[in-house]
Structures are given as structure tokens and as C-alpha cells.
Image (cartoon, rainbow, N blue to C red; front, side, top):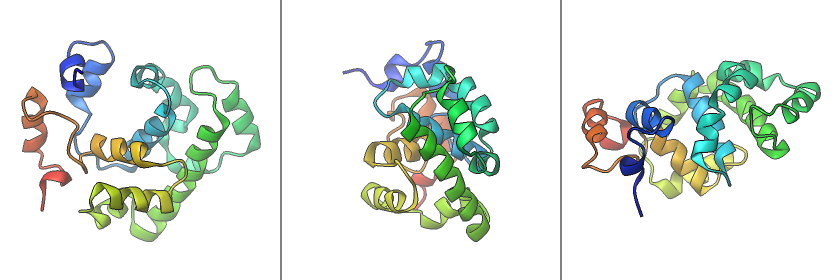
Length: 178
């Protein structure tokens, strides 16, 4: 089986994500929320489908502003369920909105979603999964693991032999810190 590091380079969607985002440290709440939204929506689907719909998600979810998304009500949910530019799954839409509310609470209590995550580092993957299941909606082992790999908190986004690995290592992502 080929790894993402082998199949992504040069691909019109996977290439840019692999080379410029996947596994790189993320420090803004909007980017963290975006990654969480994308991972939740990927459940049961291909990552290519999600990358192709990324701009649709960005528009539908107010540029991934948690405060704005947290205010979405029934009318907005109805509109989102009719929007072909996103994944029209009621459970996933409600998860995004509920998680936006949770992120707003974490911003109030910890200063930011980023600081909340950093405050729990380092944890083993199984501990992260328990924490995310307690804190967020629709976040199991796969979603939590991929989310944390994508933002540099868990290893595994890139093989050590991948040309991008050394770029990420230079940035000292959390998974490389003791």
C-alpha cells in the first residue's frame, strides 16, 4: 500500500495539502477549526472529496470563524442541508455547530482553542481520543488522530524519508517536543 507521501506530490489537490499543510504546526483557532471541520466531514468519505469541497466549507462555515458558526440556528442548518458545495449530512453539520460552541467556551476559559490543545500536550493518542470524546461531538479515534497529526501534535503525517518531513522538523512541531 502506498503512503500519502508517495501518492500526494504532484496531485492537483493532495499535492498542495501534503506539501504545505499536512503535519505543519497550526496556531490559529480558525485554522484549527477548519481542520476539525474537514476531518469530521471526511468520516466515511475520501480525503479527495473533502479537499475538492474545501472552498465550499469555507464559505458555508463563515471562513471557519467559530463565533459565527456557533450562532447558526435551524434556518442556517436547513440552508446547509441544501448546499451542494459541502457534505449535506445533518449529523456532521450539527457536529460542526456544536463544536464551534465548544471552541468558543474553550476560548473563554483558556484564551484560545490553540492554548487549550497546548495545555494538554503531551498526551498519547489514546489519551487525546478520550479527551476529544469528552469535549467534542463526533470525534472518535480516527477523526481525533488525523486532526492531531494534521496540526503537528501526533507523529505520522509524513514518513521520515519524505522531503517535507525535514521542513516540518525544522519548525519543531509539538510531537517532536518533550
